[in-house]
Length: 195
View 1 (spheres, helix red, strand yellow):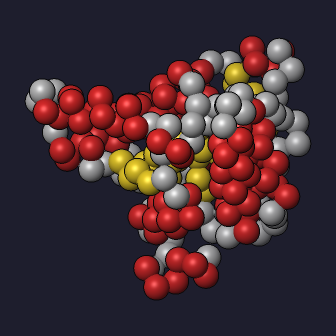
View 2 (cartoon, rainbow, N blue to C red):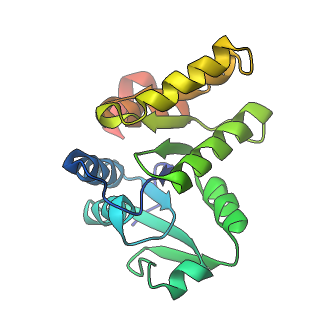
View 3 (cartoon, helix red, strand yellow):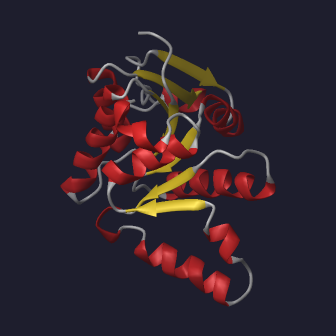
C-alpha cells in the first residue's frame, strides 16, 4: 500500500460489548479508514472491538499499526496480522507511540483502558502537548452519563467550556470520521468525501 492519506488512533474495548451495534460500528470505522486510504493505529489486540476494527481496516485495504505491551503478547492477545506490530515494555511507551503515529484520536465504547487513553490524549491536548483532534463516538448513548458528569465539572467550575470544546462528540461515525480527518488538516471541506 502507498503512504496512508491519514492516520487515526482508535481506542476501544478488548471485549465486544453487550450491544451488537458496537461491533457493527467498530467494523464500519475500520472499513471507512481502509476505504479512504487511511491507517489505523491501535492497541494491537485481536479481541473484542479492537480486533474487529483492525480486521475491517485491513480488509478494506488500509494499513494497521498495532502497539502492544509485552505482557499482553505473552497472554496471546496480540494481533499478529497487523501491517506493523510493535511490542513495547510499558503502557506508557505504548501510549506515547500511539500518539506519535496518529493524526487524530477516536474513542469507541470500551472500559477503563479506553477511558484512560481518551482522557490522557484530551489532557495532553489541553496542555498543548499536541493539537490533534480528539473524538468520542457516543454510540447508542453509551457515553451520555460520562458527558453529563463532565458538564457537571464545568458547572462546578473545575473545568471550562473551552476544555469541552476540545473534543468532538457524535453518535454517527459517518459524520465524525470525516470531521476528525478534516480537522487534522488532511482535506478541505469540499473534498473530504474524496479522500
